[in-house]
Length: 65
Image 1 (cartoon, rainbow, N blue to C red):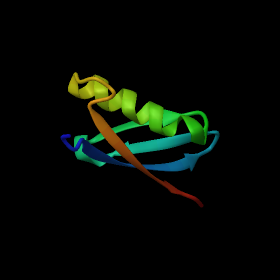
Image 2: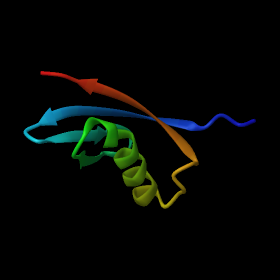
Image 3: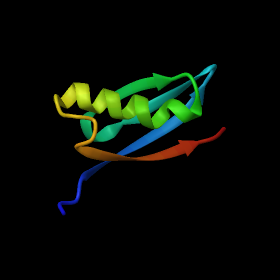
Image 4: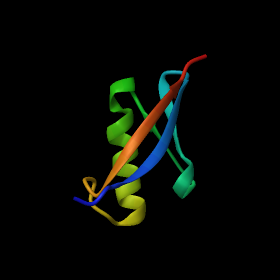
């Protein structure tokens, strides 16, 4: 079994949205709820790199105010 690459993702509340940063690809996106953060990050990475969403993992760190 081959280990998947892990993208480190950070998220912080910004008003009514969550601001998501993906530094490894110099990317950013947003989510409406905390639960959406991993999926939104995964979709952004997949689109930016033209890969499938199951070809990598994400590790999310949530920062609170």
